[in-house]
Length: 146
Image 1: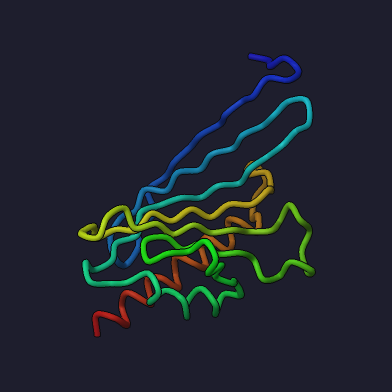
Image 2: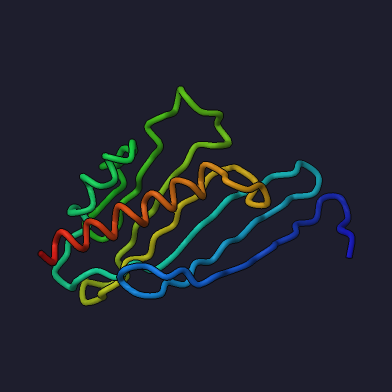
C-alpha cells in the first residue's frame, strides 16, 4: 500500500535476544513521515536487576561507553543519558538513552536507546550503542552479584 504525502507510516518489529540473564524481548520501531522523510531509530528492552539496585549503580558503565548523564532531568527512578560525542558525529547519529524503573519493587528497568537514524539501515550507531549498553549492563549485574 502506498502512502500519500504528509501521512505517517509506522513499521514495527521485535525479536527475542538471549542474554546471560535470560531471554529478552527487544522491540524496534521506525516512524517515517512521507513529506520530510523523518526516521527515528529506537531499540527498547526490559533489563532484569535486583530489587535493591539503584539506577546510579549504572553510572560507571554508562560513562565508560562515552555518554553523559543529564543530572538536571534525571532522578532516582529515571536516568536521561546524552551522547558526549556531540562534535564528533552527525546530528542524526546522536544517541540518547532513557533508563526507567517502573516502581521501587520492580526487578526490571525499561531501557530506550534512540537516534535520528533510519532503522532500515544496518549497523546504525543507535543499534551499535544499544548492543554495547546491553553487554555493559549485563557485566554490571554480574559484578554486583559477586
